[in-house]
Picture 1 (cartoon, one colour):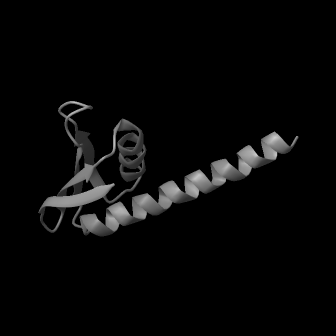
Picture 2 (cartoon, helix red, strand yellow):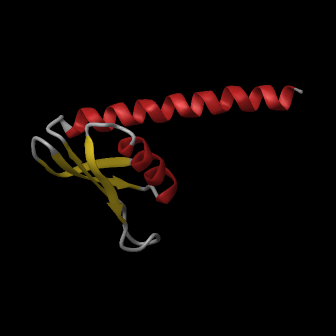
Length: 92
C-alpha cells in the first residue's frame, strides 16, 4: 500500500490509496462517518482493476490528516476486538 495526498486544505483532503480496493475503503469510510468531526467521507474508484481509490474527507474544521489517523486507530481496535471474539469462538 502506498498513500499520496493529492490535495489538502485546513478541512478537506483527497488521498490516493494505491494498491487497495473496496474492502479497506468501505471500512475506512464507515469509521470516518462515525466521527462527529467529519461532514463528508467518500471515495471514488474509476475501475477496480485499473485505478486506485481516491478518498475525499471534509471536516468541520479539524485537520483531515488527524481525523484519518483516528479512523485508522478505530479500525485497528475493531479488528482486534473481532480477533478476540473469533479466537474465543474457535476455542469452544
